[in-house]
Amino acid sequence: MDKIFYNGTIITMEESTIYHCLHIKDGIILSCGNEEILNEQTKETELIDLQGKCMLPAFIDAHSHISALAQTLSLVPLQETSSFDDIKRKLQEHLQNHSIAKENWLIGFGYDHNSLMEKEHPDKNLLDQVSKEIPIMITHTSGHMGVVNSKGLELLKIDRNSEDPVGGQIGRCQNTKEPNGYLEETAFFTLASVVQEKDQTQLLEQLDQAQKVYLEHGITTVQDGLTKKEDFALLKEMARKDKWIVDVVSYIDLENNHDLIQEAAEYVRKYNHHLKIGGYKIILDGSPQGKTAWMLTPYKNEKTYRGYPSHQDKEVESFIMTSLKERLQLLAHCNGDAASEQLVNSYLNVVQKRHFQDTCRPVMIHAQTVREEQLKKMKKLNMIPSFFVDHVYYWGDIHLQNLGLKRASRISPVKTAIDMGLIYTFHQDTPVIAPDMLHTIWCSVNRKTKNGYLLGENERISPYEALKAVTIHAAYQYFEENKKGSIKPGKNADLVVLSDNPLTVAPDKIKEIEVLETWKDGRLVFQKKSM
Image (cartoon, rainbow, N blue to C red; front, side, top):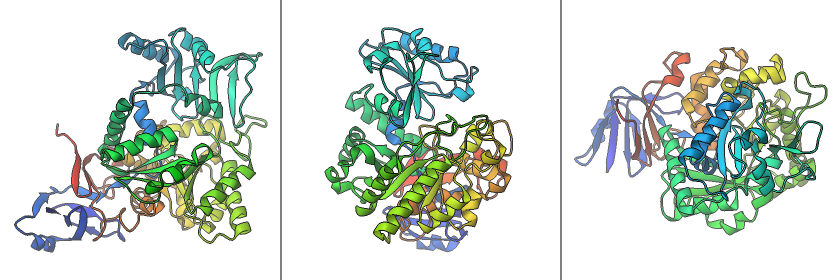
């Protein structure tokens, strides 16, 4: 059945064109225009009155982790904690209200030491006050570090003789080699991955819940940004059961799960029941708010410490070589400018040595402190910066402390990228923060920190430039610009209806706009309940 939407403000994202009517059929856009579109209706046409609301192409998630979001839905939420006592209370309450066998783990997610009264990470002593019999792990909001209790250290076989892994650190009690429970970067990634296995049925239900979170935010194309073998098995099972509503683009963990590409050939570069493999993902450093991002110059008030790399140059060049030989896109996590330097220089070295003509649209994920000269190199490589611009709000005040005013003001330098002619995208790195595109657009337009400080006035952009990052540019990042990202005849009818027009409301009100409806392939898949 075909549908005609009318009486709305339809932002097409096609050269700033705005219409009032849209005709779709069988999940595809037929035509868009004004009142003349109503003449296309037949007896079977369903007329949908937009009642003056704003319609856009559905938002596209340029980088997140739907598998990780699904897993966090069963964990103890720690995002709102403000002290060690808060963390302890939340964990204790969960233990009291849920039966946890001694062989299972109690896991919390989302604490941020920067927001705690103590301004530091908890340790095993705090978690031991919750339980010494049940293993406990809590994960930092960045996903790059966490803390386990004494029982957890025992089960993970971490003791005073354990060596720090390359690209990571095991926290130690003061003036000793005794582990204090804190694990950072590769020390955390490696061990956290073996903590707990859940029932497949429960995980599939949580994946379904997770996709609904994206749909509630107007997002119809979602990423799984570091897929491991066990993650892909679940993503594939959702596809086999035809449970996906959103389109899921998986990026395989290149370092540890390269073989998945051969094992899942039917998903590579093409959707199979809404699931496809878009390429590979690598991690080159940590997080700036956690002071593990790899910087070219030391952090503020540090004599020499500037974070550290996850890989040496030869390893990075090897990863790049693999992706280019296989003609698969590579996403690389880079927060610090040293990591950005390593990525762009490694790409240039490989491309020049092997004379690759097509770089397969590589993506620098986060690009928090990328420098202007690095952006110039990225343009030569057709490399896309995908900015985690919400950092300005959530951690801008922390960046001022860690980086100083000059560097912090250039966090997520979107306007510089625009002026240089780069394609750019935005993301929320969910589950680090919620996949709220309108808050992200607000951040890029206003660049206000939590404390209300205007951070990087020269890097502010217009609402339309921000919308590009989460629609047409994000479609380009996925090689889907001919099917998604704008409202144009022949493209998919992936649409979002908003309570207000982000181009005309006051810039500081953009984050208050509500997602009213989400349409996927011409089907209503989310509708906000009226109060």
